[in-house]
Amino acid sequence: MMMYDIIIVGAGISGTSFAKKISKYAKTLIIEKEQSIHINTNIFPAHNNPYIDDIILKNQNIFPKDHIKTNYLGKEINGIIDSEEFGKPLGKIVHTEVLIDTLIKKFQDNGGTINFDERVKLINRSENKIEVLTSKNTYYCKLLVLSTGSNDFELQKSIGFNLPDTFSGIFTNIYANDDIITNNFDFEYIFHLNPQISTNGPFYFNIGKGRISLGFLGNSNESKEELKIKLEKILQNYNPIKPYLEKLKWNKSSYITCKVSKHPINTFSQDRIVVLGEAAGLVTSFFYEGILPGLLSADLAVNTIKPILNNDHNFSEVNLNKYDLQINKILLKNYYKNGLACEYLFYNSNHKIMNTIWDTYTKLINENKRLRKEICEAYWLDDIATYDLDRDKWAGEQLFKQLPTISKISLGPKFLKALLKF
Image 1: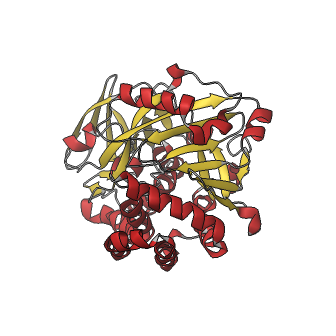
Image 2: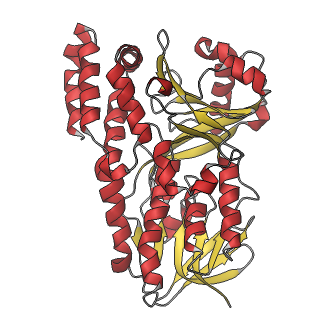
Image 3: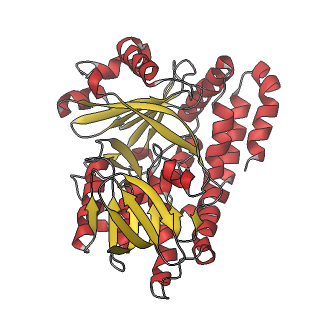
């Protein structure tokens, strides 16, 4: 019988971060359905640092450059955040698959086992253990951790968990000489809203070393083929990004379509089962970034589970509920509300409203030093639990003041509802 203390399904950022930490105290297995980890480049704000050890954080293969500048790209005016104005970087740029691979190696150094190219087909739960049937083997464990990301909810559905909202996304990697990248980009991150691209999410660039990840979060009803056609049209014809693509070449065959979680489920644990990260819908609302909630949920799960390992392995729903309570207290009842308000305010099927709000916001960033500093401080935050929602209320009030007079009249109720989400 292949028996483990803990089995983790999924080798994304939340699963591997959790595995690296918990494997010091428990016999642990990761099961990953893919043959390898997808290449991707992301921003890594300084508020993620508490969840990564210093040795990893200083590894330039993982974090090849500082994140100094963000461009909130507008059609006419770009809102530029240059952190040098306030004395320190916003964070790092991360080559995400290298980070995950490093976490896996540290997990293995702790005695952990990982099996790639193996799909979980069925989960059977009894009073004392969980049976995990895969495409290759049968395993048993005392605790099952689901970290399957946004693309595979069949397992959690089969055992009674709710499913997060999802919508479509697409991205690609472009590789180029660093001299070309440096010449084209004087910032590390572009965030852009255009309702003709999507009314549900941004178009973005993440600028790494020798490579760029770019893509957009589309509308929920778009097919994979429609997303690919749209991305190709954007790269070929969309004027606001043409200067950044000079001398760059991309490969249509490398377009990766995916699902992106949008809103959290209502329960994150059951008897002997915990759900982490994007599988639980834990992404930052509005930006839909999964790294911070993935690392945070993994850390909170370890803090919950470690004491239970020393107390007869009683992984009951009652004992695991501390994890749910901490997710709600630290993430959802505070930090997450900012994104919910922005999501409600900025994303709109009315193209004119969406353009008006976004264009006003990019202009406000350029003109208002306090707003630029508030954005920087959100990147730098040492403790997510202390996030100050008052800064977001203030930003919303400043944005409303800058709207054209006729827009203030029509959008007043919308801004009021957004403020009520805090």
